[in-house]
Image 1 (tube, rainbow, N blue to C red):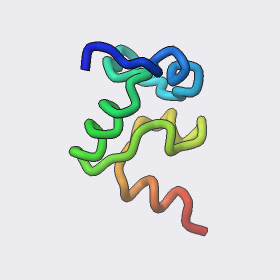
Image 2 (image 1 turned 135 degrees about the vertical axis):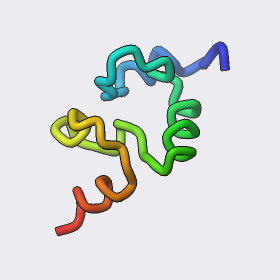
Image 3 (image 1 turned 120 degrees about the horizontal axis):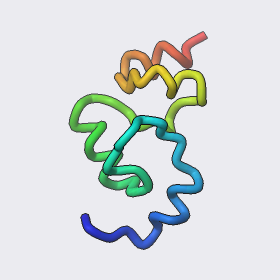
Length: 66
């Protein structure tokens, strides 16, 4: 996808801190990329958990189980 009509709005909400991410602000590409790897994107995590760069489904589920 070369152009995303919502990219500027998405960038204001995107909490991905991974350096050089080519999908930043293009949520549909980000979601497809991570789901294909059995992961979830940064926006599913709070700031502390996002900083770990662990995007696995297992980490996501364990992070929110009490």
